[in-house]
Amino acid sequence: MNISNLTITRRTQLGLSLIELMVAMALGLLLMTGVIQVFLSSRQTYAANEAMGRLQENGRFALEFVARSARLAGYTDPVFEGDKPLTLLPEDCSGFSPEVKEDICDDPKHTPGTSTAAFVYQPPLTDGLRRDCQGTTVADDTLIISQYLISAGALSCRSYNLKTLAWISGPDAQELISGVDSLQALYGINTSGDSRSANQYVSADRVTNWNNVRAVRIAVLANSIEPLTPAPAQRNFVLLDAAPISFADNRARQIFSTTIQLKNTF
Image (tube, rainbow, N blue to C red; front, side):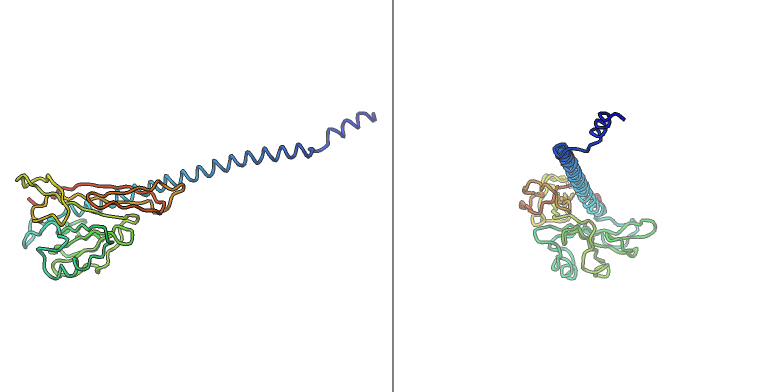
């Protein structure tokens, strides 16, 4: 065997030099850094999209729950025996019995700084049953008050039986939608003499005759529940005519509002 050929063969089988190994490790670290950055960015984008989707869902469902009862305000079956009810419960319970005032207006349960919205109606038949805002079955000849409020960071509701003058499922409100910071309501009245429409929206303390309310405007402030990274810019939120509010918990927030005409007041 040729000695020179053996030497060349052995040299071609030698491993990496230290310099080559260090260069390879440096390149590998650069590639891993890029991969990690892409992974973290994708993860943050996914979390932000999921949070914004949850926020949109919270706001829209919260409005839908309140609007559903608002559309029923003042409703009774054609064969209902009794006086036609007021469509709304005033925040001071004026026009209602002392029992209603004691049970509802003197025991508000809602978060300070937020409002409530309460609607009076006979629950319509759905699949042969009448249900309140919590889904509890009520009797056929019953008028109820469905009250929506903010409690422990959630939109909640409770229902009051105007026949028995008692809460249907107890005085504590049941959570409907989590991630809702505030609820505010304005009431539409007409100052031009047209009793069928509203041309001005006022707060509850400025309503002089609740029989003249023709519409209700509802606004809710929903949040993403989970904090975001990076944190969204801090800002003030103004719901209708309420005072500005701000938060420093790194959650995304958005205001949702709707206006409902009260069809059963004519």
